[in-house]
Image (cartoon, rainbow, N blue to C red; front, side):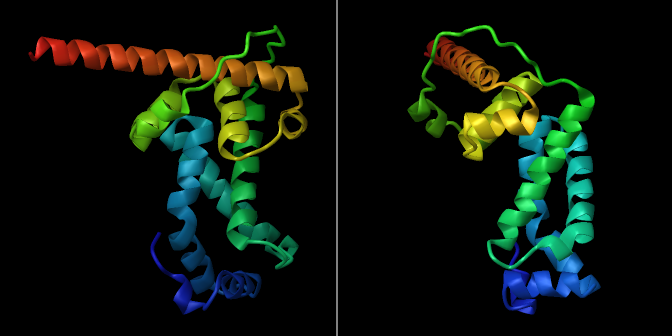
Length: 191
């Protein structure tokens, strides 16, 4: 992140400047957080142009709702929550969240393999997941929401949330296995 905060001293002074309508504070907020917020939006939307639209709408919402920030928690966290909510609203408006409540056998995600991947590779894999799977995976595995919270946010049952997560993990495992197989073939061909 670019270090813009010294201009305002702290994230709270930055929030105060935005509350006062200070244009430099608004620009500083965008400069400071746009990269992180775009990455969050891309995780949910899977498409950079759509994610940029969601992010810009999110920043507009931050400026509109700044009076609701009560200085009791992290300002960055408050902005992040707005971005996640904007992404979820966009997904809901597209009506693409899958609601398959069929039982799925539990699969464990190989975290060691995931950690060894480059972040960009993982982001590409996440982008390949169907919208519903990607949304639940992001909320649960990355944002730390519970299945009950996900169900409430998306208007689905907890069972559907668990099923979507399980299927997302399964798809990611398959993608990892395919990537490993392709790497093995490439190494064998080069020997």
